[in-house]
Image (cartoon, rainbow, N blue to C red):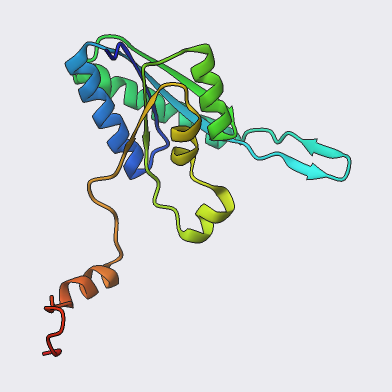
Length: 168
């Protein structure tokens, strides 16, 4: 039985979907909901070793405002037990550390639409969490993906062809 849900938000479309789905689950199950966000910090590496970077004040403010807004939204939709946290560091490490301190039955994250190059260089936070989290993980995909007008127009112009049929 799911008694506690942690949802990770970052302001992305899939993060919004993760919030919406976790709010609905929390409401239906009567589960506690914790909304968390991570201010990403990348260490700077010198020959002498890594030097931790300091979080950007604008980023910190953005994540606090985001979490506050989402907590208010969850309460307005009927979730009674809502908490929050703003973390900093590597997103995967920060989320896993949080879950070690505050265990949950379910972790809900958004699926980010990274390009192949970004995924190769950075990895996928949601994939890493699915593999490493001690609790169940639900990955929420955005219902509508933003697509450029040019790509949308190309999609509308395409015609479905039956395999083997000559082009019209």
